[in-house]
Image: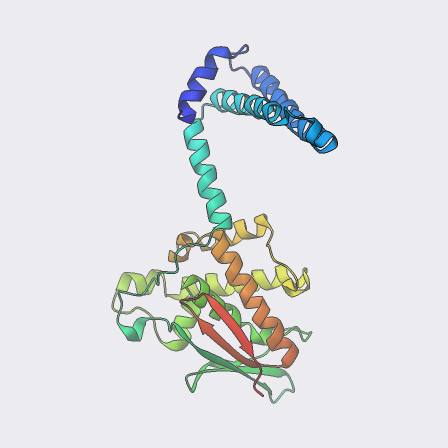
Length: 289
């Protein structure tokens, strides 16, 4: 049975079919009550165990009542239950399942592709003002400028290029990395402008700063295995309209967690090596010694 067919048939049993505000409120209260009945029935099963031989039948009935109210409320709101279910499935799959790691640049010349594997070297130092610095080297070449924390406190932000590396490795997306490596997709002017240009770079740098601010409130994500849904929603909002929007929230979460796992080791050891494998979507820290 299609959910929309079920919705249409339960409509015939609606005892408050006028769909006024108070009618919908009554059904919402009924939904809350039936959800409580599901919990109560399972509690009895836990309490009585094998003595409760009919618990599955009772749970089927209670869950059916919940489904009835969901269908009726959906109908009162002018929604389609098939569409509600499909939207929820898209949302939950995107939140918990990793998406494709197909490269966004696989059809471009090799010189315009992000590297699929290699090693970043984060070399520590001190500038003429006495501030701790980090310099990044890839394939024997200097990437970007010597970085400081740009802060009054030593918080290790000078190693934040590892976040961009994580985005490139896990998401296959990093306009910052493309710029540093001079691998912008100039063979396609529209893509070069919209995906690899200044605006996209600002978005990525903003994303790194936003994520860092979030992480400082959570011990730099040490021991964290899941990120707050609201935080991931903000990441999705910030990157909407860019090619990386094709990645799932599970992908975003993995990129952030792997980036910070490497960041904490870089900070604690004052630099080091970070190996990356884009095909596996993995970063691995190594000390220089």
